[in-house]
Length: 442
Image (cartoon, rainbow, N blue to C red; front, top):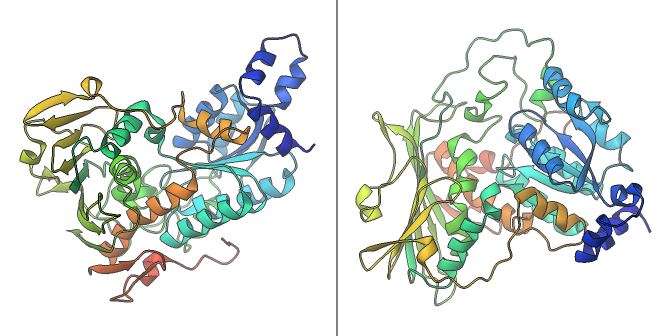
């Protein structure tokens, strides 16, 4: 039995394995049932993913990879037995037989090449949100995961929460009737956007700048890129939409079974060739999904417009005070108002009466998990596939990122989702798929 088969059989044993943990079996038996994980990107969200994966008690840390030596050395202090790397390609090649799974928490532009390489080596993969930097990358990872039959998950943590799953169950049970309109918003960006490229300067000695650039077009270092503000630059990040929509749009996308939009248009300002705008409004139209799921108009808002948060008309919330992040889901029998980015706090307005989620009778149809990373690790050990796996998260990510293509192309896109193309223009093609820098592949 190879290691991958062993992990699956240990997980399939379920409760039986939990009993073994409390017996007098040698510690090595329990140790062998843990998932050997490698971590690509260990600062910021990467540090959180590292800690949350290891705190599960279900994983071993066998390798750490980061292009910033200071960040890498800081993480290695907690896991001194893990091997250290600056280049994930070298790590995967050298440790292929020791690694079961890979956690990718780099800036957006490196998600896909790291994940694709790991999947082709039949490693299970967890990738921070957004799953990828481009639509083509999302489609590629979705197909690779299905082909190689690995356990995958995108890092939108609220997808595994009880509260979000209750909302999805409520929507799918017809709690507010037939939904035809959704509004979602965030106060991001909270990092600089709307910029022209600043003057270059030497990269810090502890940062491998060439590896940080990865597959993106090469440019000299400037300190508005590392370690955080890269999100606003199109070559590396996906702006406020890519950062937050995978959290905020998730419940209505999932609960209403939206799939691919058929059209998308966007406005915002300023329009800069390299950097995201101060504010953005994106309008997507989704088709009917059968007789009980009518077409949906979905509007996304981010940033500040004329000094005020860009968002939906407050009256749509029917008296519920909206906050910095959330969504309003409007049906023919009521409205749901979500009051945070992770869908932890939401209320239903039915017949003019505001009802808290705890007071609603909602049939339970979805499984529950104690933590997002645990759901992924349990899947690796033979349990159910995580609900946020790439078969779901890939199409969801595509439907998020198409808004960026519409904004940058500055034209309405009539969208053919299955074929990944706008049927009315070629202006968006370069934003759907881009060429990688020499030496990098998907």
